[in-house]
Length: 565
Image 1 (cartoon, rainbow, N blue to C red):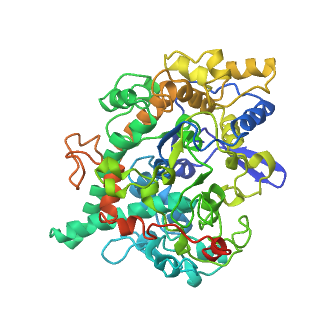
Image 2 (image 1 turned 135 degrees about the vertical axis):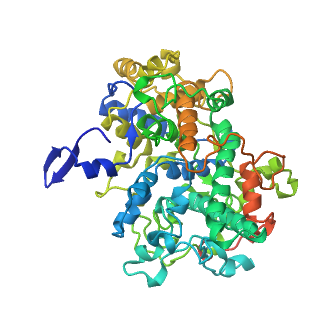
Image 3 (image 1 turned 180 degrees about the vertical axis):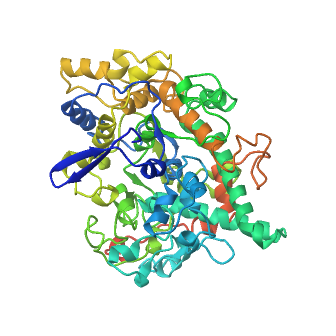
């Protein structure tokens, strides 16, 4: 992690060496906010803490938060922030210029996980058509006793483009998405959010072409328009939902104090105009893992997969299964064997009803409301994770050996990764940032519906209070906030807001560097641009595109669930 040595394993022996100059230049630029590494809690305590965080199933009606679509928008944004675009080029053996190398390793909010280096680069050219619009894939029509036309037939534009039978390799290789960052097919929800942004680009591209923009300028102009509207949506809609709006306003009004400020603050992090941003591990390993607590165990996905339908709701396991990277796009076969299963494309029965994931009444579209029992809300940001995250599918874990047991528990993985990096603790960072630290009672007891630490011994409680892992600490901050509980505040809110601001500042196209820029695309409120505005524009204001499977109950008859696989 950019700290001066590379560890290499040969058999059972691990050796360390200083990286070469070329390797140092290639390294994704991580950094530390804290002045010193933190004292880590023991592995035994990490196991107990992870168990407490994932022990009980969360009641679907327990203190819900924002519309559930924002959970997976957050994951899509995470991939944007940490995309290493140049790695794809190196894998294909293409030459990489210094400029491209720097751009490809920049933790900026520039949608490089969506665009890569664009159609001008041979590695990414196949993701676009000849005009610079994204290629999209087709779903697979499946037999459906309910007779829904959109289920029985292939539906173009509702699946990611996939390698298909032309791929040389296994069935798993045939299912892989043809996109710059395959992490955007880790689960069905983030894959569909990624597809929505591809639609968004294509619609912007078409609009500019209709306005007479020269062909040679279309792609770059479309990308700039998309990126700036995306950043505006993050700044004005997404961030205030997950972070105390007062902190967001303070940071974006020019008071970035801790992370790479242009003036003032810690001199270790001072930057000059034009410097590329880094990625603080306190953000990537702790603060921005807030989304893990927002995940629900199941979702009302569409008319086929909802609580009262024969197929049941879309469980988290199914969202992993019906992806090309973590699953096999099929009901049959082993979810942990990417070469098993019948389907090479997403079945049409799994096309989402986006009205169930985003509240379009916020954009003045009451006609797009669904009944409350069909709408999905994210779990409130706190110290509990749904029980399904106790055991991740093997395909969702990017490591060469096959993990098992507690190693599949997402909470344990987060806590262990932080320990491996010597991450600063919550109390330590609060002190360094000059903020009032959480009390012992807040850390141990938390708030109603938070993780219960009844199984800890007195000694373990003292250890946890003294060296609270930063991720757990930040979630306790949100959980116990005196006002606006369920949003990041204090240490966590400040880290997230400042990194977002710096990542926008470091983008080639930037609303921070262009403070007079305002949205130009259609929106419900003049001068605004929200996620629902973005979705409406991307899907052409069409209910049929936002919900291709339509409405209405399904007949409860044997075999319906399997027949829509």
